[in-house]
Length: 272
Length: 254
Image 1: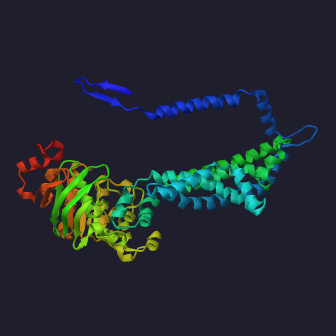
Image 2: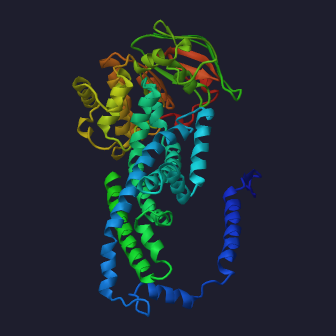
Image 3: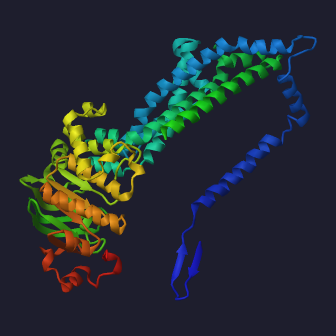
């Protein structure tokens, strides 16, 4: 706490800023985790370089003799799997986000003033968010068996968790002055929401939708582990012996993510 | 007609904002409420359309007792009362036209308004309100591209589109510069005279209140200490309302 005494004797106290405590805690946590990462020296710089070389050059040893044209042909071979992955990520992202929308509204305490309503919805959101995507897919496969449908269910839940959390925070920070004005014209809460809050959050919702889609594509790697024939399974199948194919898959994923990123920036520019 | 009968308001934190208000405001009047900040002006104004619930007493608008109504009845009352705010309270990223037409939503079912459908004559009404405020050419620009004075006019157009019989204004010009302040106050005068709409406004600038309002209500510590014509106001009365001489910032000083 800082105290100032003015020349005329008046005393001003600057209140303690909690941000510093939070920053200090974060710093300690970072130091602790840093140790976990680097103390057990599992990976040396040399090894890292060798792995990268194996990933981004065609495999050529006693097990396989592949050329650069094989390397790029494999990327083309992956396209159908990529398309399926995009479809699943998109379907899950859209369905999950649409379900997240009303839940986020009900969880926002500036709209739902009753804590017995927004409390439980916040709780549900937080529970869903703690479950990793892979568990979601496994949960889905309990009901419908391993396959595309299970993957979509998993992505739906996963997207729901991300979208509901991000969206309710946006709703809670919207400017409520216009909402007050709408209520003063005699609008009911739904109408006031539609005309005062929705115009503020809709562009953000759409930009988040693209973001969720992108996260889903990255998270789709894990689908390989549960046996869905997708871009992730290409990594899973090859991760032990064919580093070059893993590298090719990574290049393809990288290109797709960059394209989505560019598209997302363009849409966001339009929405401003 | 607005009628306060021994209206009291105590906030949850124990602050007594209104301590027994008795008032009658007649149709077509232009009333300015003046007093120190914290005297209860805003509470008084907001209790009229029940944006704030009163604790005791009775408040009538025509024959409706505001304290006892809720739900649909309350919304019906509110749609006949326009409200103007210090910070304009527009949706900044929405077009001026959409802001103005939103003054009509209370006239329609929720379902219809969700899809943003309004009858053609209401769209015309919205445009005519904008025209009356002299900003018809801004109809399809975004609200946040307008100056403060223009934004307050959009808010006035939104209120007019409600076809109100009364407009409440809570410090309508407090965040505007002196020149646009005059323009917006002229708009209020025009709305009062041309459309015959009653205006009740909280005013920070005393000279503006005296110039534009026909009647002044002085509030001090939750009570009415002056209620009379603005031309009858004397320096002694103002000193009584404010408990001191007026400060420089309480006068626009044209």
